[in-house]
Length: 464
Image 1 (tube, rainbow, N blue to C red):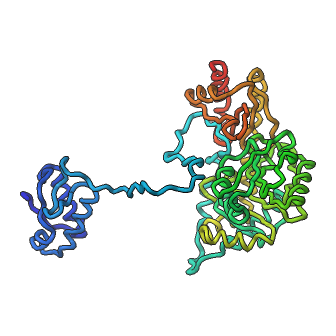
Image 2: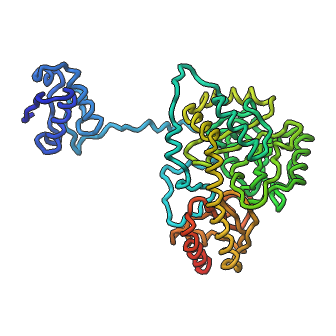
């Protein structure tokens, strides 16, 4: 080694050795393939412990600048050295259960943002009161033990009051179980209620991730058609164990379930011993009449598990949701929650409790509803005036998206639109059977971009 290592200066000794060796490699004083002194030799030369030098060597080896050769010492990495793999073994003989072959892997990279984003189910991040929220994230104490799997009492009480006023749900704090979003709530319900081979009925079209979740638990998932009154109860298979439905704002069509159909579904569940999971994912944003009573408030037989989320109301990244279940299921659900993640994040839960109790959630919902209502109104008006030759609007008065029926397969329209910077999805991508249409979200697109985005969409129809 033809350069000098010095310990002059301040700082950790291993870091100074590392820095000088790295500089020598980068400026060519230590050439590829050149041997560096053994750690003991360099330590004695510098008057430091061998381990001090070893830490610097290990860091350079981990970063790929040095390579150890068995029985020969440590060298500056060269093209002739085969780098040691830092990846986990392939595990060629290991295979997941067969059901996972049909569950798509989540994308590794975030989706590319397009200038005209009509994605469904995405709220406007700019409306979230981030500064206020940061002020609420103040842990008041540090608990030494694990918390209640149901969630902190303050948040359960706040949620019970909130959904009682805003959604007419019958619940007190003991009825509420806080979850990491609605998805975890569905997972807990499925793990507590569904045996492998049980039949689970879902709406068609409907929420694909819920279908995949129940299928991953070993359920036989069947699609049930939806008409202008909601889920077609007469089409439910008699041996169904669980029915998953979105009655307040059917996903993705947007139609609410009629009172007649709600009553029929509850009667069917009572007669067949089935459970109804009511996913009320975005009904707080309403633009006309007051919503019908939820299934949970109409239920007198204890057949409904009510699931809610703050992902659409606030932010998806907060991962906060809840469920309200009959008393007979609560012990098992609490145990399942404990086995899953024990108790979630108490600091975030405490912040949300304060956010609700101080009236900030209600204020945010009022403000956001005005913003979303203007976008909903503008999109509906333009579709009616400029798109009548291509599509029919499915009536909807709530949520963050609307659906349209097209006169043919819109796959090519979506492809062309995407090439023009317009993001949206087909209705068929949410369905098990054939459905021609589009799902047009308005949570992520500002009002001043709506007209240009729809103009490009109209051009895509003309070109396809």
